[in-house]
Length: 274
Ligand SMILES: [Fe+2]
Image 1 (cartoon, helix red, strand yellow):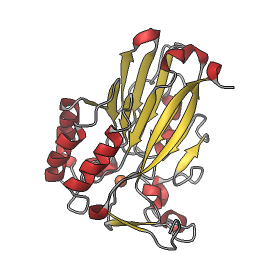
Image 2 (tube, rainbow, N blue to C red):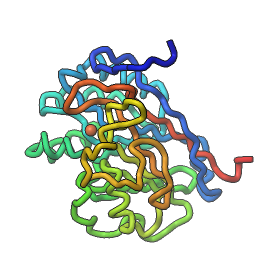
Image 3 (cartoon, protein in one colour):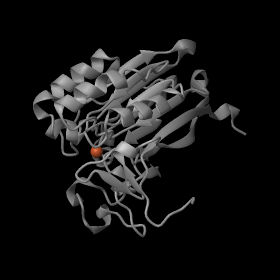
Image 4 (tube, rainbow, N blue to C red):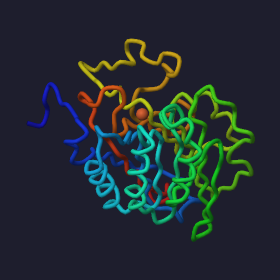
């Protein structure tokens, strides 16, 4: 049955994530990136309720897409042991160009004393962890990749210096944050607007019934922006922003009518679009 009234997604039964494919138009000056892909995965929340086998299947599914760039939106694991089990699995997902991550509130709250350890572990397996920092990577064909990551907390201090300074038409700019609201608060700290922004945190509400989620009844009122959708694409901040429903769960170990979702965004140079 294609549609059911209730569809419950439970970690140990996880077989594969829903894959959302999207084309993103980029300026002609970025023709060197035409056809390249960005995989976005967020809120894995590895735990006993989302165990090794399930995460292995998730990583295998993502790796089969052979992405050029991989971005993680934070909330990796529930405990330090879960984090230790997750790292070798994440290391299997290779990107042709590079992998980048921001940390989530879960990473700071539950792993508060080891969030520095998480940054080190991510870097060790080749994922550049961005906490109010920016990474730059020269690419073949004269293009340059710039990826910046905002702090996990929407009220967090402003990044020390504006991201994406020294505008260059050959730069492809990605801005990441765990909280969607961060873009409403701190996007002004970008000297140049991003071509793509990525966020997680909301889990698409995690529970959706008759189109309503806990956010509709005031859940995390102070941490969300009413101007932004709970999940999906929006141009509200002034640039394309994807708010992903993510993969895992927090608080209650299941999802209702919100499938685990990963995203493959293919860059399409505007010169070559009809
Ligand atoms: Fe989360």
